[in-house]
Length: 110
Image 1 (cartoon, rainbow, N blue to C red):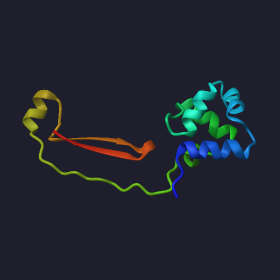
Image 2: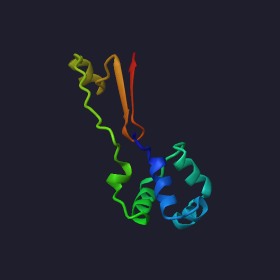
Image 3: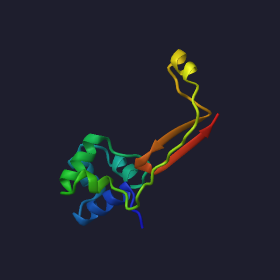
């Protein structure tokens, strides 16, 4: 089963015998921030991620790593080069956004 970032933070916190309040004090954030992270309603910024990894003696890679492999997606579509030269935009009828931290891939058709 894949563990989310929030589940990992909670697991490491509990393994150290820390309450959410104690963790929040060590990181200089609110207890509510820790609650949001652990419930995957928010994510720590890069500085807090580094502090969490250091506190729990884990690498950022292991903290952020997903248990599942993410495959690659290749979309091939003709792009009007002349339009691209004029506008600087290669936007086709598809607009793609990736969010690897949350494991979401969105494909919007225009």
